[in-house]
Image 1 (tube, rainbow over the protein chains, first blue to last red):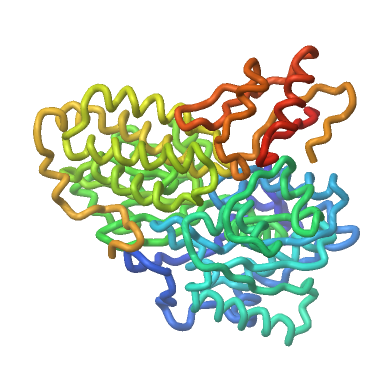
Image 2 (cartoon, each protein chain N blue to C red):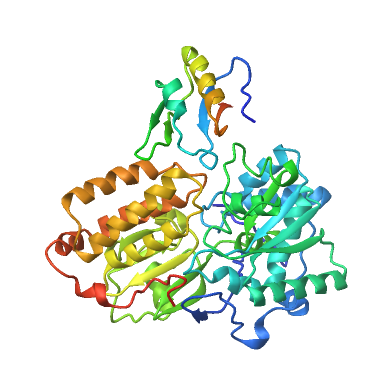
Length: 433
Length: 74
């Protein structure tokens, strides 16, 4: 991968890696993450400029430079899908450009807190990314999309916008829009549907929103971390690295990992004791995959490395499961939550996910029969790829990965009660705190 | 939306949000539509063959929820 090069004193230097958040932050295990943990380190405009310097223009004759730099850096979307950002931008351009930029900060993953942490501490970096994208693509307005309950995040973003207007920054008009928080409120088609006056629920789209989005115009929708990395790229910094949320000791720990770090290193940095390695780790989020710790520990924390191992970085969640914990019980709890969090719009998801969750619970209780496993396979096959969004696909993939990572437990559960099933769950589920 | 280019390859699609699993499509286009355990249509991902387009159009017209459509493939 070719990285952006900086000229320092006329000499070509190694690319300088940019950081979007150089601290480790710790949040309670559940609920809206709105703790500004070290009073003075949320950037106002002055400290933002001091930290990152001014943002060069991406307008007019500079428009191609940022797009090319994003392509060289292979920046991928951090909402979960890791779609190449440059390809999305080129799609907007091919459709004529203009339209709206949407910064998606509606963080629906219960175990994730990275987007809240970023918006609360580096609001101007995200907003710089919004403006750089708008300049490059000729967009004439932008929206920051948040959960209604994220009061601190909203206050910080609103204050940052006022500061920018006061300083006369060349932003397009940027407004904040909110929706009652739920698992799917940040799903891209749900965001567009809500911004068009409908409910914040996924919808079926024949053409991507990058071509036909808000008001029928091209719409660039990115997760807020993606936009923060766009702002690094616009400054000639290397945007690689990932914001992660690691679930440790009942808390959500947010940190940034660079591409050289392994899962084992990141989990230790988040506070996991090296003397008691976990048995497995959930990677990506609740639509993610379980990997045994043996398989996962040495993997580098990049989407490419994780994909090669059958997982994905997804929304950046890492949830290690301690030895003694029950992976099947954890999975059953999450599947019940996912079944209850569906939009209830698409038949296969509406009927299939509760059926899958029920069988997973029976499996966790040691009450599943052989015929249930066969039924599970059949239902899973009927649900995958059949919804307007990828919600059902994620749930099915999570279960499939659990049956592999905890294969021995599946057999043992058929023989008697699992002591781990009585322990408190590691994975946070809203409504049960 | 849903108007395929004349003569180009087309594919039958279902809007799963609009679909109520009524199942008329499977009756008028039995060769193209299968129903799952709950009565919702499963469609082939491949392009329609020449002789299948008439049946597909009948299914599109027959859907009381207007959930079926023909998509022109690039």
